[in-house]
Amino acid sequence: MSDASVTFDALAQWFAGNPRVARSKWFGKTCLKVDGKAFAVLFGGDVAFKLAGPAHAAALRIAGARLFDPRGEGNAFKEWVHVPAEQAATWPWLAEQAHEYVGQSGG
Image (tube, rainbow, N blue to C red):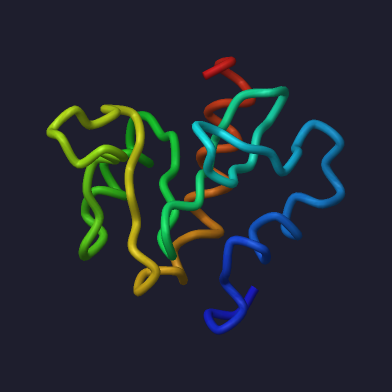
């Protein structure tokens, strides 16, 4: 997937052949779910990913990334990392990591 093609729709296509993954809604936002559990959510033009361990730490080192606080009230979801659209080249890897984490753990 080239940098120019990395959009949320492209992420959805990335998982199109996987019967365990579906495009859905999560708190009113478009998301990708594995076995009914959200692992990536579209937030404005950005995407938040549910991650753990080294992938979570790596995501937080991405320029502009931060813990996902959808209400902006200081109550961030500690497993979720909000990655700005400017860093979309990182999204496919993060989506794979989030899919693996949520799919294996039941996240």
